[in-house]
Length: 185
Image (cartoon, rainbow, N blue to C red; front, side, top):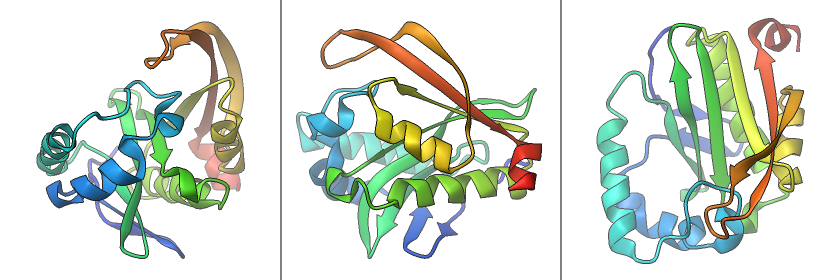
């Protein structure tokens, strides 16, 4: 596995680039305060912009590390989402991916495009062997994104996810794609 970090990636409609501290306002307005976006995530909506600013300043610093893979999703100059390797196992060349997107861009294929781009980069340039993604069973849109990108269903962990906003437990669906499956696509 090559540690190439969060280099700028481009698709037909998107630019994926490291976050910058000055992205805070857009992130705060576009999704970090939206309960619908954060419903199935491990964090609750941000309550003030100061927290968002501090977080993005930390992300900007973190992006300088070659083993960090974390991108702002930018469409037409606007930061509209986040996609990253949330955990990395260098010993096995495996990564767990996570993402979120501004609600007004749901259903437009944006996240599928972003995930496919990151998948291709991690396999094609960085040499990963296995990519994983998980989602709350009720978050069927996230599952569709994973399926469209070739992630194969591997199982459902019963009541393995605790929704941060409500404390409710839900089932967690696991999917993954292997290098050889990606090469056959």
